[in-house]
Image 1 (cartoon, rainbow, N blue to C red):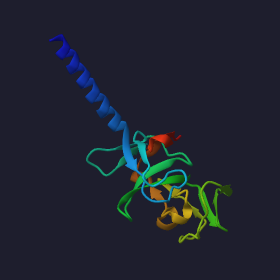
Image 2 (cartoon, rainbow, N blue to C red; image 1 turned 120 degrees about the vertical axis):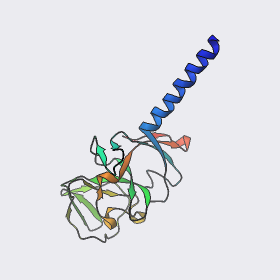
Image 3 (cartoon, rainbow, N blue to C red; image 1 turned 180 degrees about the vertical axis):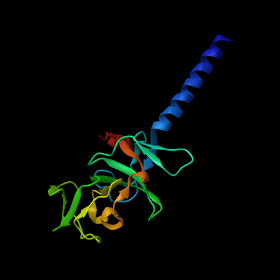
Length: 174
């Protein structure tokens, strides 16, 4: 009886732990070349969901903490109806300019990323409130804010916390 009772407690605690972890993190598989060399197609990452909480029975999110520049975020693209991962380049009220194959944020060169093709949108732009500007690291192969514009904060699912697969490339992102 004591062994069964201990087993039941362990089972309940294990289930609660898994539910708690699944509330905090979600798994996401990277597809495509847009984030190379940071993330490769097939990489599996854990997304921290705590910065963005879905409000039940609404299509709204409560933003607990604004994303930081250079963080990697997963968001839903209405244009392609898929989830994408991109890097935060600009926050609300930042000025983004793209000229001579170079990205400028508030007049300073943004050096991260591979190459850059000419954008479709007219630059410079000022990022709207409640929106952010995102780019892929492999910019010649990235469908990003240069093409579909700034992304509303309520489209974000969370920030990438760590790469868990392949195991030999395990990495913590900050």
